[in-house]
Length: 111
Image (cartoon, rainbow, N blue to C red; front, side, top):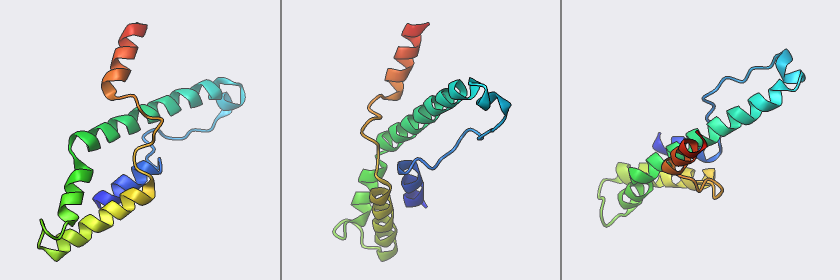
């Protein structure tokens, strides 16, 4: 299950905002709304990747997949599957270099 979460996060498949199509999008207000929703989605994904990094999820899976450290075959199999799915999803995007603290500091400066 953890591997599937990392896979979907790497492929940008999590939508936390509903996609609404109405008359406003045809009038030009949709572009502003689309940019704002994309910015919120990027911030959400950045926060999720920060959480994955701070909890050391990938490192824990790597340790669990090592046969010298883990003797339980089921644990190793699930860890290997999760690492494979994480790798197939692409991992953290390179363009998302801003951390949550950077985003908060930038927003405070703009106030």
